[in-house]
Each structure stands twice: as structure tokens, then as C-alpha cells.
Image (cartoon, rainbow, N blue to C red; front, top):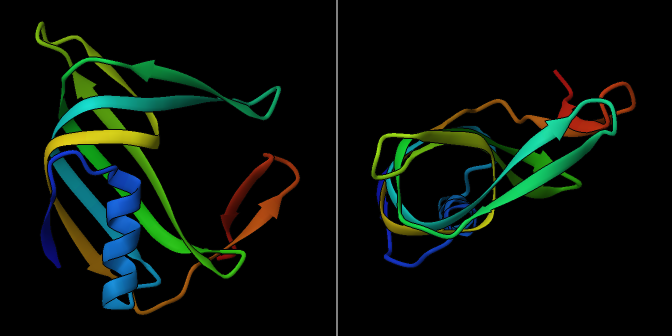
Length: 130
């Protein structure tokens, strides 16, 4: 499925809403475009916590990739994003909300196998059960 996010939409919310409307519970997501502002993160493997970084300026989405699965019976969008500023400087990491788009085009490739996330004590993350 190919779609365009609306100006001002949050990427995570828009992808989840689209998956709900099309009854997609598992898949791969690719997206490109530009953001007005973003929240990205880095997972500290020792503390097992994300460090979030707020980006309050326009950036190009160089690459966005993620997946759809189920976590606690609800749709879960896990994505990473690479962003470039006006000088080509790159920032990237785990995608968090709210990341507001200026313009964004996305593709969701549905997978017929359900992926369910379960808590993994070793990493502190909710990972696929496969």
C-alpha cells in the first residue's frame, strides 16, 4: 500500500491509523519526505533506557524504515529515521512521537505472518517472538 501523510501529521500515528483502516497487523514500512520537527532516540544498552533528542527545525527524511507488529494485543510501529539538515548534517535514531511531517510518502508491505512482541529480559526490549 502506498500513501501520503498529511502536512502536520505525526508519522507514528499516521502509520498506525493507516494499518488499522486496512487491517494490517504485520508488515514493513518505508518512508521519505521532510519533517517540521522530530523526536529521535538512542537506546543505552547498559541502563536499558532511551535517551531522546528533540529536533525543532525542518529536516529532510533521508531514510525511514520500520515494521508493524503486535505488542500487548495492539498495533506497534517500530521505526528508525535518518534526517539531514540544510547543510547535509545527518542525525538519526529510533523514531518517537511527535515527529511532525512537512511532507511524507510511505509504503507499507503487508506480511501475512503475525509478529508478536514479547519482553526480553536480556536486552530490556520488546522483541519479536520469532
